[in-house]
Image (tube, rainbow, N blue to C red; front, side):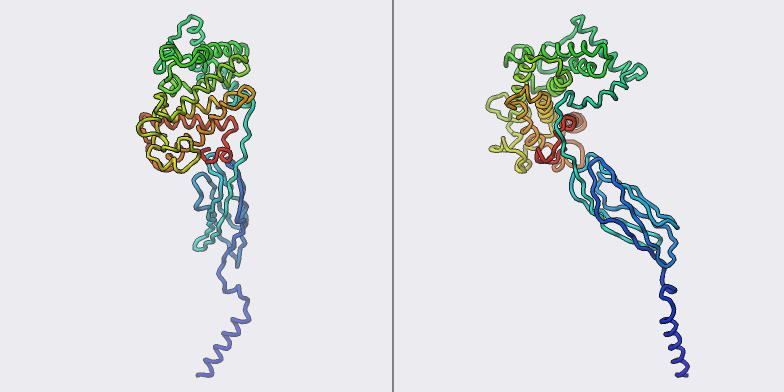
Length: 422
């Protein structure tokens, strides 16, 4: 009996040794894919994958990417038998932050599964400042598209923008504008009508564009000519709060935009007056000194926006540690930095020869926007804006307007300004 059992084991051992190994191996697959890719913000990239079918594997393999940051997206993929390859397409949003990330490639078929890390590098093209006009919120390359929309078959244009422009022309010709030059609410703020005319000078009927530009200039210079005379609280457009109070947050963006949009229609004398006024207004918007009683609300209050001794600090984390940093979520605060940005970007270097107007960009971005961005990402992250339902849309809208101007002007350069608000 023992001899018989021994013979049986000898036979089994021979068979296991002599038979091909794969005759008793489970079907499987292997995955072949790059472990590193690079793509630009707002771009896409293809990631080819292939599988090797082992031991007569005939299953379908589902492939997906896990652990992607929210600013990246990718399709899922199924490599169905008898195919052995496929392509994942990754897309990065414009809002993504440049940097390095790691995702996980998951390949599965029934109970079988494979994993591989994928290192992703997001890069950003260095923005190039735009010298041409218009450059704020829109560029010359946008005009053909906008003009193609400015047709009678488009009710938004025909019954909206054009109708408003024609009515504004009628009222202007009739002397029917009500603007007393105050710093709060006005029925017909000159700068808003100038903005409408300036926009029509870019996209309206070709035969009417010069007239619209002339009207925009007339209304703009009506304000600038008075403001250039200096501060006088009893005179129209010259109150110290004209550049910083309610009128400025509601309508203040118009001044920089109008100057940019009708720049070729402005004379050298016009530009000199505009430069003088824009420099004063910018200084008033960024004033955090409560001692002169001309500070820009909310800064300069008993609880200052910036720590004592750091009022001139730039991109300094200590600015965010100060309890006054929450004032950066106030709609006046963000309106100030928006208005300064638009004014600084509107003028050409040749018309700001010493760069004294353009210099206001540094504190507007490296201090004011730095703090606003830091608080948004920290203290008030993940919930309702600090000013609630009524004012937060304005607060954040002004930030978006500022960022849009930086983007269109080619100045949304994180390496230049030192932080990633862009």
